[in-house]
Image (cartoon, rainbow, N blue to C red; front, side, top):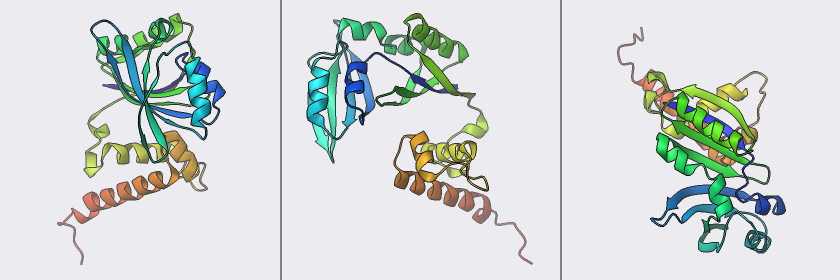
Length: 220
């Protein structure tokens, strides 16, 4: 399996995102009905939901946006795609090749993606889809999973493993540090406090598995 992290200047909700500068939109899932109606669900965070709903009403890529729920200041909406939105939507191709989005976060600047592909050819097909539709895409990381990349390696969860790898690659573990905890959280797409908790739990899991689990070590 291939994992890719990349940003996309995607036209879907671009109109809305550029008019709500502090917006964060987290994709949940996409659904295609038998009559080819396509829609997706996403959580929206911003300071002014009235401004968001005004902007999204005029967005050429979605239609009849519906508020589904609200939780702790975040709102989940259903976004049916217009024909313009469907033309730019990569989901049908991604499903065809067996790819899976693990995380999609949109800001006013771009969509930040982390996607799992069955092979490099699958990634190349998605990359070429964006380019052929005039959509700018910037690759940050592309790597192949191996046995050592298994998220359960040494008792780590997926999130804990990802946090440790990001901490190492970003310079958070360097002396002096080249990355703050807040910057590490931005890279992972979670809050600073959640990043701290993940990091501490990951270190604890590694200690438990690699030190506490070694019962044969001599203490003389």
